[in-house]
Image 1 (cartoon, rainbow, N blue to C red):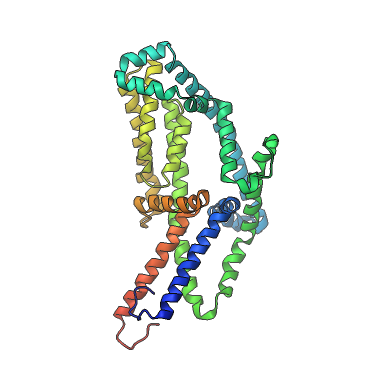
Image 2: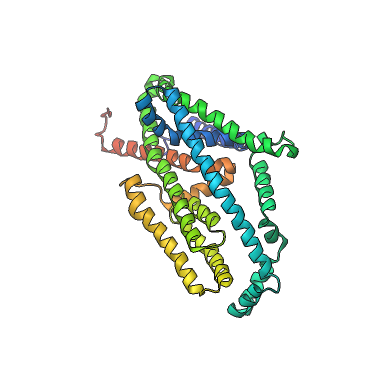
Length: 377
């Protein structure tokens, strides 16, 4: 322990250095293997989130396999339903926004309205930005799909690298198939692993390790599962609100803000693109910019009320979760170390480190409170 009063002998310093080296070697290995570990990490997170639902279904049907099958069927139906509803809407939004940008950089009525209503320097800067090839190409639907495929290849080159671009349909199915296979196997063994792993810990350390893991699992169930559910709900609230007031890219922007809410209050940064999109919508429809901006603000306020008044008290309870600063810092650090894999495991690993730190501090406090020469239980 770093906080105890034992002298720092040469042997102890060497063991500490070896421990640090081992941790760094593990992080380096994870970074090297991150490309092929991402599907497993995604499946593990899904299994952890879905296991409570599987247990509830198992309480009714009694069979673990049947419960997993029914839960996965429900999961697939929900994902397919969302895909069939949201993707066409997003495609139309992208095409609509692309048309608006093309009109803004040409001599159309929309460009004339923007020139009249915006300060000359602001209008010229926006026009130059929208006229760049990167922005123009991004809002082409076929280009957007190509960019998504390219991003998938960059994120998962270990799996996607051996598939030629000619087989794009197969390429789109391989990664979800691998994740789904991992998910089935993890759910089948989930309960068994939760019991068997304790027997693999040496008896002298078993009680302490089991207590630590249970504390970590409690933190994960409170913060990780709850925050993901809240983020999904906010995706719906933001996307629905923006869609109802007619904002261009409303669904895409709403989903982005919902995902950003994994770090509480980070969605406030989404106000910048929301203001820009509101301005374009005001120019397109001829409405007052302040009215459109006010409606956009109402969506933000409604989402915040749903989060703070309804979702957080009911899902998170009175438990103290990770602060927004800690969550953002953990995402930044783990993302820098391990890329996409780091972003996936950032919150679990942060909960793990904090759980260990709390036990370390508690052990030191107990050692101080015990009379000299007396051992704790």
